[in-house]
View 1 (tube, rainbow, N blue to C red):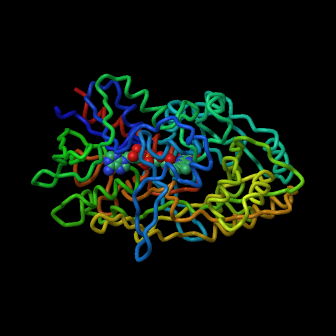
View 2: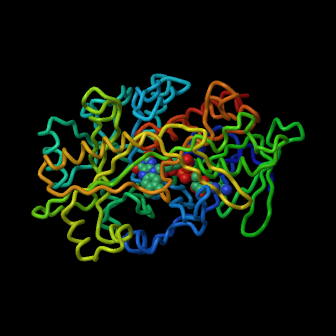
View 3: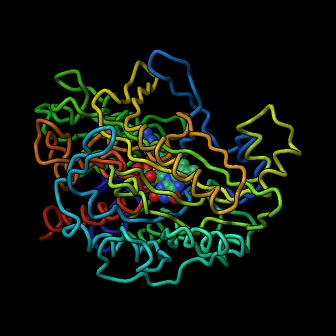
Length: 500
Ligand SMILES: Cc1cc2nc3c(=O)[nH]c(=O)nc-3n(C[C@H](O)[C@H](O)[C@H](O)COP(=O)(O)OP(=O)(O)OC[C@H]3O[C@@H](n4cnc5c(N)ncnc54)[C@H](O)[C@@H]3O)c2cc1C
């Protein structure tokens, strides 16, 4: 195969979005994706298949440092983890770009401001056709372009929850979502959060930017192409070759530019596995590759009223940021609250095996289900490592006081709204869904592997564009920020690498 100008490794949010940003540039681009497209089968809308039988989970195991092996909820398909995402496409708040003190310590500033980044958020919202409304959320940052589509409507039980929360003096707001609700429900009356998108209902990395990118005849996608390692030129300053395995065959490519977008964990793994003069892997003279792993501290909270059934189908249309910047009493930030997709008995059974299914069905059908999310702070000892063929995760959670505080205040609020039973359960380590920080960007090559345009300080033709570049996790879902930066980096590559 002739060498393309650019190879992008991974077709998830980072990879697909940067491909769309480079479309029409005249560069020949090949996307190498280890997965295959998701097939449309009845499993895709079966909670039993997805949550009990774990039909879509990868066959691989990761290891906890000093602990047991576990099967991670990390998905390898065309479109990456976004095929399963809750489609919440929300901006970090303006304050997240500055230093912000939390109960568990300081969240560092980004190397650029919200105002500099804002136009890229607007472009990403257009690309992912985000549905939303402005003016409801007190923490909402400035938007130069309003949402192009009205928010996904609240179902009646959620419209009622919105009123109940407002009556407490809180500010529930519509979640910004990449969901075409008619298209989603046409394929089955279920929620979309954690369900695979085999149609057009979710605007994920594949149905959004990848489809747009592949309209350019110079851009191609190869699937079942697992990138194993990168090789540098003898001086170590550039990437000379990509080594990958496709259907059992070992292959090599030598493009001019390499864009690594394999996700925060796997991009770090590929860099750490690649040989280097200092033995620490590539892009790693700062010794920060794999470090600062963050994944949000989060829990599910079920507000149950045995007298009031919740017949919502999708549910996931509300958020609450009243505790995002302060605990409500002048104290430090707690986090974001948003609805989960509607829970059913199968989903509960997958987590609480001892309770009989009929009891779980009753509980689920009378619950409004929330997701509480708090910032995980960067810590160099929270890290992804490799040990031979093993991926080792040493996740040191931080700032758990925020999750405790948010759980307490939301339990009180939901009881005050009339739900006599409020149950909560933290998400466990098997769910690295908001993984980020492992290849962070920054202003200083001594402390960050990437510059502010995601170019490796150590290798001028290598960019890393996925959740790994995020210097902080904030307390909102990461995909829109990854996409916005991918568009910003694409623009930078066009100007610095592709202009005549
Ligand atoms: C159940 C679930 C719900 C979520 N809900 C939301 C939400 O509502 N909002 C939100 O913002 N975020 C959500 N997320 C997180 C979101 O999906 C991720 O933040 C986002 O997909 C990360 O983008 P990425 O480019 O870093 O990685 P990914 O999108 O995961 O893409 C990485 C790609 O690289 C490929 N790859 C990996 N290793 C290799 C290799 N060695 N060779 C070749 N290819 C490789 C993978 O197959 C994948 O396609 C959710 C995630 C999950 C799992």
